[in-house]
Length: 105
Image (cartoon, rainbow, N blue to C red; front, side, top):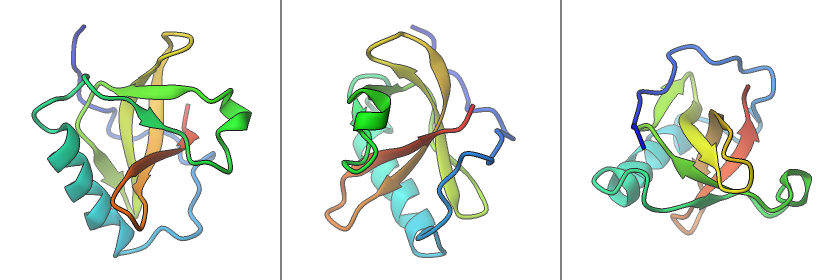
C-alpha cells in the first residue's frame, strides 16, 4: 500500500462546514497526528454516527496525513468496504475521537 499526500485542493462542495471553526481545525490536526502520524494506514476511522448509515457504516483507512483548507480538515483515504480511494473530511469530536464527516470527491 502506498501512502500519498492528500491532494492540495479537493472540492469542498460536499464538505460539512457547520461547526467547523478555528478551534476544531487545530484540534483535529493534533488528534490525527497523535493517533495516526506514526501508524498511518493501520487504523480505521468511522463515519460520524448521524451519517454512518448513508455510507453503509463504512470505515476509512487513512492514506495521507491530514491537511486543511480553511477550517475543513481532510485526508486521502480508502474505503474498507469498496477499496475506493477518495478525499474524506474528518473532525475530532469532544471526546478526542476522529470521525469522517463527508466524502469530498
